[in-house]
Amino acid sequence: MKKLTQVEFKERRDRLAELMGPHSIAIIATSPVAMRNRDADYKYRTDSSFFYLTGFAEPEAVAVIETYESIDEGYTYSLFCRERNREMEIWNGYRAGIDGAIEQYEADEAYAIDLLDEEILEKLLDKNQLFYRIGQNAEFDARVAKWIAAANGESRRGTSAPAQVVQLDRLVDEMRLHKDANELELMQIAADISAEAHTRAMQTVKPGMMEYALEAELNYVFGRNGCVPSYNSIVGGGENACILHYVENDKELKDGDLVLIDAACEYQFYASDITRTFPVNGKFSPEQKALYNLVLDAQLAAINAVQIGNSYKEPHYVAVRILVQGLLDLGIMQGDLDEIIASESYRQFYMHGTGHWLGMDVHDVGTYKVDGEWRAYEAGMVVTVEPGLYIAPDDETVDPKWRGIGIRIEDDIVATKNGPLNLTAKVVKTVDEIEALMAATK
Image (cartoon, rainbow, N blue to C red; front, side, top):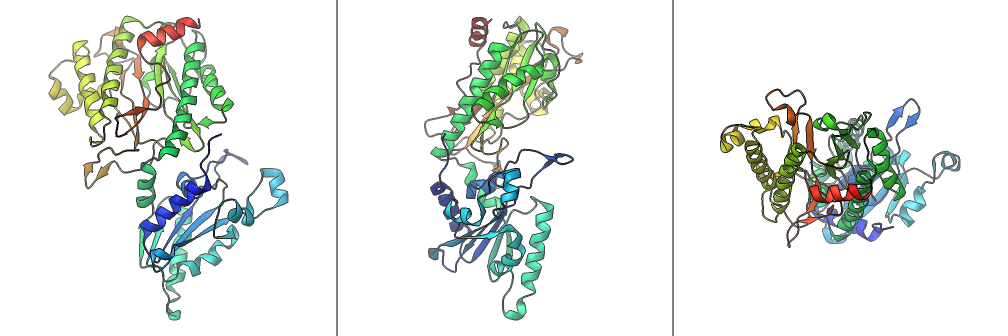
């Protein structure tokens, strides 16, 4: 199993300390446990940015990084976490504890999480800046505000709280936006497993099957490979594909309909994100094929636009132009191409963007604009490319033969110096490839 090492987590902390500058402190808490209902909680998933810097996946933990007066002096990394507790470990599993935080996770100092309020004050005093993730958790925000107030109350000792509070996400998000080779390797593994799941779905689907049964085929592949879904899976048959975030997955898949699957897994905290649309019975109708090939043409051109130096929005502009021209050619829309694009009236059939950043989160961190302008692609950025067309079943402005058809095609693309790299290329997507794959297993 491929995993990141503590060397890599330390390199990230080194980089963050350098960006913070001298005599500063960063405080980052992991995510709290989330309750599903009554006394049953969801399976715990640590906060992505916290894990990015620490590799520590337990709940109830806070990391603190303190730099000295000169950046050349280095920094101190402290980890506050749960203590070992035999009784609680019998119920809920192993804890690293204070010793493990130092020995396994290479903290310079480790404390029981119950001592956070007591120990943090001394660490805050006389720092120039506090880097903190403002607005992530209201309860923790209130604790930080109390710490700052307490530090300000120490002025009679000739000490004070940090003069400036800086949004920590400004630094960490930019670090996370650019993936290194090890991160891309993890994302490739996630993509390969997800591609296998989509292939299995194409091979096992049949008329009369329930959407949730098809979802179970995806989950089998994810689970067999030690993964969990990176988001709620969408398995929308027929007109359900026209609902962008359809997750009920409780309807019957009908002969003659398409099914849209937007589903993927997370491997070692790195996500993939794939959408494929294919016929339940293995054969596209003429109308389905025409719309599908239009979306595929737009997607292939949009992928090619993920070039270093291009605007983040370029793939969207490219996809929209191809989609609108195709809708005009098919008679689904009428009017002038440029006027339709300028007025955005195409949003009747294509109402979402063409992609988003991808990484440890499905909708990953990183700004989309710099100084008010769409940022340019740089090496190591990963973006989804996912154009679609959705013709509502009750849209009386369209010939009935087109109604109720929803299509989206999505891949995960890395911007590289050699052009776009498709991490999810292992799952077929042309009409001929899909029909051949499905025919071979029927």
